[in-house]
Length: 585
Image (tube, rainbow, N blue to C red; front, side):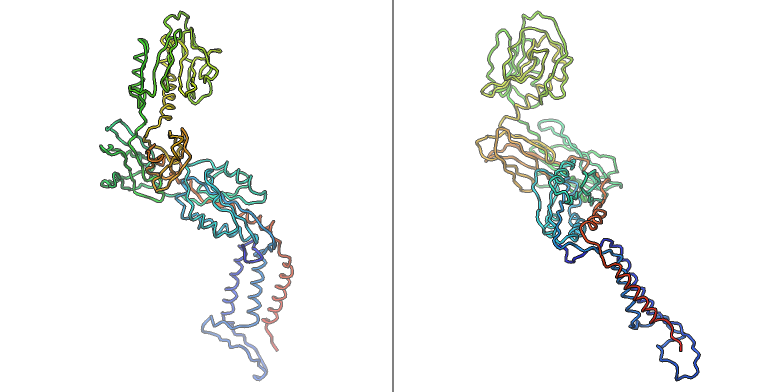
């Protein structure tokens, strides 16, 4: 709340106060002596002491003309400041939306300092201001709502961003639609954005030098694993950095590296035997979130496979088992590869089955497309138009079949789910006579089907993922809540389902997911979005200055006594002239 009943529409008018030291300086200058001819000495008026030579400055002597001139300067300053009188019962609403992009962490310590002066200037426009503080992360609630600006500033100092680079338009449109028509909506960010109409931009960023660990991959398998990390300089100058590896609570010897702008360098090494996780560290700079890269030894859920092929398909099943990841022949089987004769169908008992048809009596000719592919996650971006099949006897469709591919009105590929949740991926054509094995879509579809089976298996696994990435774990619906433990000791608990979806931590490091005493998932999360590491586009923009001037004109009453002040200045100048004009007898 503003303590004064008025605001100034033209703060630059305060420059008129420079007239005060000018008046003082003039009155400190000694006046030049004037010769006066008189008839007798006793008729000479008593004059102030003047000198013909010596110092040009003397001590300030208080006089009525001096104070008249000071008063004129003060009145002129008041007029030039263009005071506007506030309405006694006026109120305004201001909605501040913070950019949740993780690049804002580079300026976390400056957010409150760089916004407070602007917000206080807005608060001065009305006796009461209702504040709302939001962020563009839809998962987070309102940060503050009330009329205490000091409380809002404390929230600004404590806040930190957590999302990768994203488009804030939706959050800004929502904030604009929820606020009143005359409310002020301010978007606080670190770079220039195209904001919706009715939203003001307050960018508080600046270009900074930043080096980061930008990408990673793990090669090999088993105990022969190699990690690779790309280090890159997003600044304008050559950077000299040290890097090291943190493992099992210890650090390796630091090594030096020179990073040229725009020229990536690859750091690599081996996973030590017996260790399942490590962290590659780069010497910290102002933006520290991308200076560490955590790894865990990948351990996908292994699926036991049962093979029931015939002479035409057994070799294919073996090659699929050896090619697709984390599959091994064993029992009890999680997955079965089966070849059946459509004339003598055999019930399948595996939890999930890939079914191929082999009709040795088929005599129909070969045919091709066009085919119609359904819009299904298993079928996304797969091209089946090169498929050549042999028409013949097929399995009859069921009402609940999830068809993936059609030929005319015949379902060629579908997923069938039984009442006890057993699933079959069925290629409903004479498979040995087709060219399906030559199409990439065939292997990709089977791999996607297997991944859905793997996701539903309740078994521990280890993965590497990105900040705030969505992850799914298989849990026991009756086993209590599922808890995510992040690298800084925080916990996020959600209700358990067969497939429980969580969000990976927003800070790099190691994390785990548990249910009771059972480990469901161990993982490492790293920063991966290069857009947030490049601060060359960071800038400072303030559109509030022009908006404040318009608000002053609409929300405050202009000074009505300006003509009287001008008349008073004129009278003071006339009186000053009369007092300082020479008086000669």
